[in-house]
Image 1: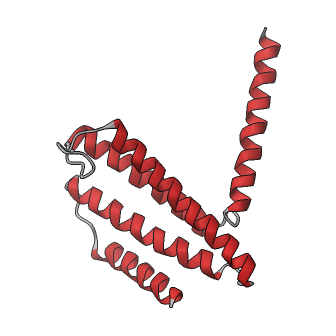
Image 2: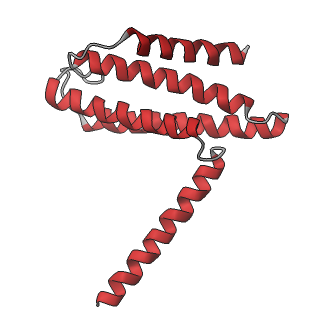
Length: 148
């Protein structure tokens, strides 16, 4: 019985690793910009759940409390961001850019996620240094100037 559980564990681990490798490749590689985006998306999602559960100040529900439907929508939105990154990767391949569109898209969403994190931390009563706000604004300007 223990051997079956061990075999299943290694099979599951192999499947998850293969799926992760395929997804990472489809998103243009696991570089620092994609790592930052995914990390910011995770932090923003977790903060959103905490704000709804503890502060009851979610902007995604009528009364500010946690709603599983709103949480699920948030996860789908995060998946949509990754879908747009995938589209950008494919466009770079077609156009012959070496990651130009992908980089602009990722920078844009890093800035958006960053502003959302700042907003969520503000709801929690934490002050935010101007340097952080300015950094996200600069990233957003850079992403938008890259698009033109």
